[in-house]
Length: 128
Image 1 (cartoon, rainbow, N blue to C red):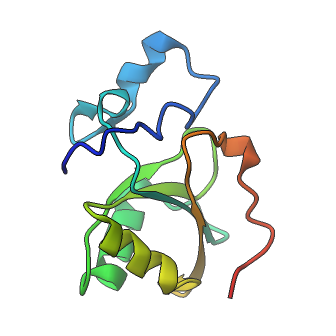
Image 2 (cartoon, helix red, strand yellow; image 1 turned 30 degrees about the vertical axis):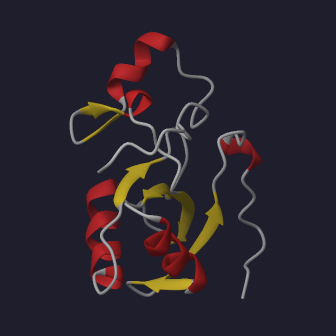
């Protein structure tokens, strides 16, 4: 994944202490050192807990015809994930296709911006 220059993960979990950041990784590279801005945040509505590995498999199956985003769990949330794309075209295509059904569960996507905090993301309304 290329460096996008603007780190939207700095605000993923404002309760993390600096020493906790080394526990948050994508592909063994600290997230806070990656300049990521081509991101969508999504919540999958399921009664069961969905882990990162399951979500990666489901989303890569659903989106494999146009992209394979990096999937990361949003800390201290249930079934909420961040999807990082290689380019704007891939992100726009995922955004334009919403809402998504992934393995029979609804996946709601929200645009991410680096001023957002996880508690500010409201998944109560679905965009059609």
